[in-house]
Length: 236
Image (cartoon, rainbow, N blue to C red):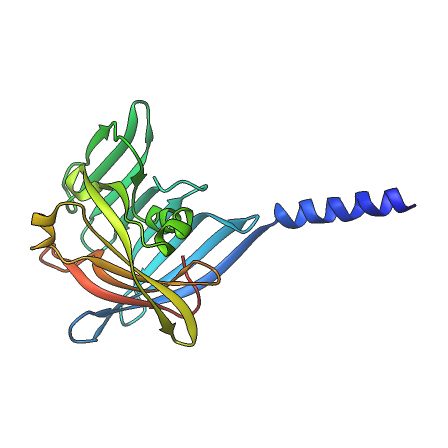
């Protein structure tokens, strides 16, 4: 009887660890300077054994009309596979594994052709939402003050660039202890002209609470918004 109880308890733990769970959270994107609401992000995220494996993100304008959708596959990798389509302008961006490396693709607007390029990217690779995976995998190093270098795949450029992530500080954010990190170019000269992306990560869940920087949603002229995205609960 005792042996049977142990087996049942172990089976229960395994089922709990392998449990698939869908979580939903919303991000509100405001203009970084004016504070005007630009769009909302509605996340439907699937977790397996507590690990974020994939997501569907629906983007809505201030009137709640759907303007874009992003589908992401993570499965524990910072080199995320994703496809983002803006229904207003026909813009498409994405990345996916391919023979020989990582395929990046982009489409500028309705009527344009889809451009793609497969790259063999050395070292640690991060793409899109994979940045959150990178932070979680590097959490202890960041807490010690180490700079974590990686190569960022940028579909809009069909190329990759050397980046790094560093811890700026720890502080309370909306009642939660957070580690604030900065993503920036690994080249000092580029850092003079390109602002970093700053993200607040919840210290307990290691998930994003707030994001400040360039968006992958564009305005009518094709220029990326500069936004602050705040989540209603620990997000991606």
